[in-house]
Length: 406
Ligand SMILES: [Zn+2]
Image (cartoon, rainbow, N blue to C red; front, side, top):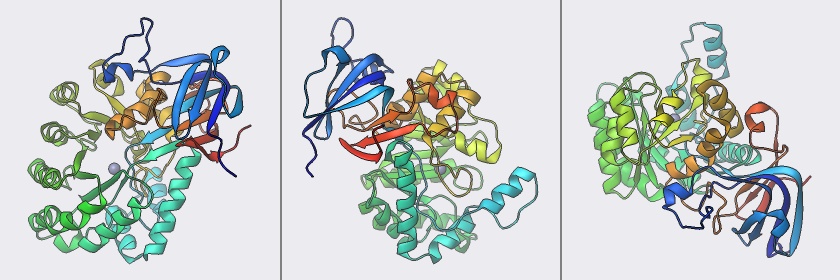
């Protein structure tokens, strides 16, 4: 059956648009300003093809080929999860349980997942990837980024990225995740591989390059060298920065002109200044602090300094095995003192900013028609009713992609 050309969704109690373009005086604003948090009440929206064609008061809605009555529910932009590690095999629940119990656990860490991933056939990796992507979609995520980083050989990194590129355009080469055991005696040799032959094999499948800049992974100079090589190969840059301790990651990201510095848990005043004075987005990943029982990042300090903040899941089998943006929103509000509006903005427009995308994360005219129908009258319910399945239906590029219309 052919899809209708246009669909009017009406009866929306709260329509979060993140589109302040049409202010009271109708002036067109600078793109950053007009993508601030914004919402309409008693609203309607028209989807035409794969795009948003109209938003406004329900009483003034134009006709369309099909009509959906939201019945007093809220509509939001689809979530943009800008940080996830989905190319892996195996799981580490015993490690998690031991960590929560305060028990020592030897057989843990990233290298356990590296071993399982290298040993897995393509079909296993592909099935795991597709299962997680479907899980994300069902929870309202309409765009997600996906990193490599559990292969750490030229063929294993390249095949992981090729699999990821089958299901998302936001593919990130993370050969610089950790130094694999076969290079333990020669970490400099591994950096040369990452920015040389491995990059050459991976760049055709990727849009981004990322590096884990942390004690025990890669230092500031190594991280900068990896990012520079990636940029020279045409990739955008992102950094795992300042997760476990203060360090050079944020400054490396600022100097590289990175799209995003991710984690940002341990920051100096100079780090906050660097984030506030550059376009680098601070992507906060509260699932990781939840899963490791570490202190949460200070979102208020960043927001009050004028830093652009995104929220993402960091979905991975070790430190943060959640694919749920609603869970991250609830943590951000409860544990990181973000307002419900700030958290929803960070999970939608913030994620889009971290991926340097202007077509998603908002519901302005011409945006891709990625939207969520909540089983609730307002966005605040995402934090107010944590752990409750509130995603009634999800449209992706104008098509009903998950859930159903109540
Ligand atoms: Zn990560």
